[in-house]
Length: 98
Image (cartoon, helix red, strand yellow):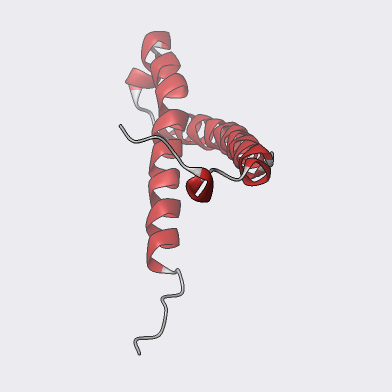
């Protein structure tokens, strides 16, 4: 392994600069996820109530409805994040071919 000489030294000012963009991105992602989980929980409960009003008996089983209320919003969140990633990847501006 070769040692760095003076011309190849690492600029300490460039390394020591603290950026918060990564932290802010994670914080924003967590906030958006919490909001989406809250909304997805409401959508899941509304769907369960709508199915129950149609006369399906399996809605009366607490085990099934609790499972759907716990898993439904998370599955919807995964689908929503996948859709956002797809749109972000396909709607980015591409550099003009020169």
